Image (cartoon, helix red, strand yellow):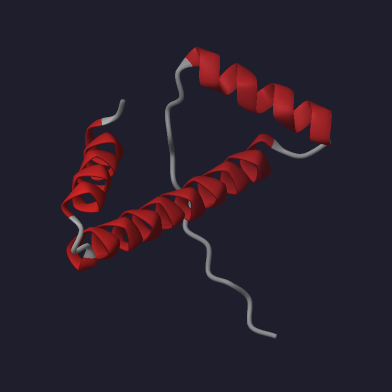
Length: 84
């Protein structure tokens, strides 16, 4: 089994975030580093899911033939892009 290559990074966290990471690490009995890795992994996965949802919505918008449906999907895309 080949070992996964790791890259060392240095990050500076705002105090509030650092405290939250420490709290999670203590609660789960993990190192701060492990918690950060898990949070980054979760964030990347969430970003991929959000992108996938957007492209699904865009495809539905392009395929819509009913003007009302197209308007609703266009509004949804606007909220997706620009927020509520």
